[in-house]
Amino acid sequence: MTTRELTRLTVEPGPDGVLTLAGELPTALNGEGPALAPLPIGPPEYVERILAAVQPDDPAFPLEDDDVAFVVTTSGSMGEPRGVLLSGSALIASARATDSRLGGPGRWVMALPAHHVAGLLVLVRAYLSGIPPVPLESVGGAGHFSAHEFANATRAARALCDIDGARLRTALVPTQLARIVELGPTAADCLGAYDSILIGGAAAAHGLIAQARALGGNVITTYGMTETCGGCVYDGTPLPGVAVRIADANVEGVGRIELSSPSVARGYRLRPDLTASSFSNGLHRTSDLGRIDDNDRLVVVGRVDDVVQVGGVNVSVAAVEAAVADHPMVAEAAVVAVPDSQWGARITAFIVASTISTLTPAQLKDSVVERAASVLGAEARPRTITILEDLPTLPTGKVDRAALRGAAGSTT
Image 1: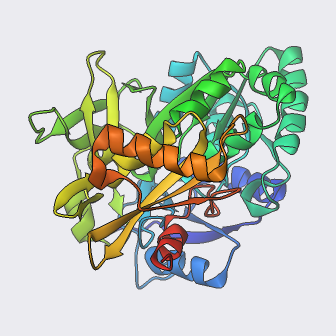
Image 2: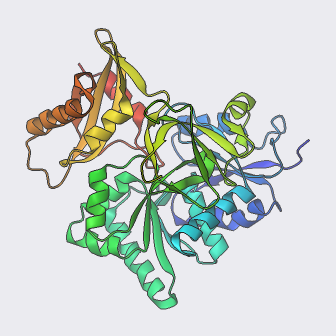
């Protein structure tokens, strides 16, 4: 029977909330205090969904494992959030693996919420290195992410690194990187100041990554999830101690991605059924499909459940999104499918035009449709394309796909 308590810790928006969680971090990691369930301040419905998944401070729902240090919720972008049971050893193993890949510890500019796994790992790395992070004033929803604020924080952090010799790093989601790239000439100074820039949380358009790298940014794409303490595969290559397996691969080598690592979670809070089906002895069976390319790198091609039928033809929504995102005049893209009485499913794309786009909105829409059809076939072409100034995001910075599905469902 477990004896460790699980306590709710509300993370206030802004640097003060980051510092509060950082102060509680050592005792939680080392097992000297209660396990923590970091929660945001946000819309009541959003917080209630998280509380329902985690049930902190309730003796009727004891913690599953005394080794668990944090219960971190998934974003819920694909459905109901789940509380993920992360041990202190798993979080430490993840932080050390990142430092090993990147060449040692560093100073992190913190732009991601501390109550989600990517932000929490920044704090764990900072704790292990003894180098305090540099949180943005807007972090955790204290304000909207501002590329200009990020650039100012970068200059201040770079000055500290020039004094003490620490490497400068940050972790961003694609929408944040897109805002920084839009800074123009300032973007090169900002991105070039970093030794490493981790991009995760969602698939980034290849054009966006190419733009950022052309501006001097050492951008590293990451793949992972809350269940693996965040990114555990960098630029397609597993971190030290991580093994990737493609299960039940088809003739094209595509199958379910399975990850094993010391950083794999113990399971899901209060969901023994999902724990049994998704975890076993340090292995996590993901919901993603992938393959290993000719250079032994992992290529993620979609989700197990993202294939829909359009006119009797199977179409991968993720593949359509990748094709749309690869368009040179598209800065960001998100694709969803909604039921359609005639076709079975209707593919809908939401895009943000690149700042270098020379096409009219109508030309851009036609060009995107043509590209998707030429790459994947006529059935895969988006039936509707909406051009937005920004994609809607969750408090984590990830694209709010539920909102996009709602918008797509109301489109005629």
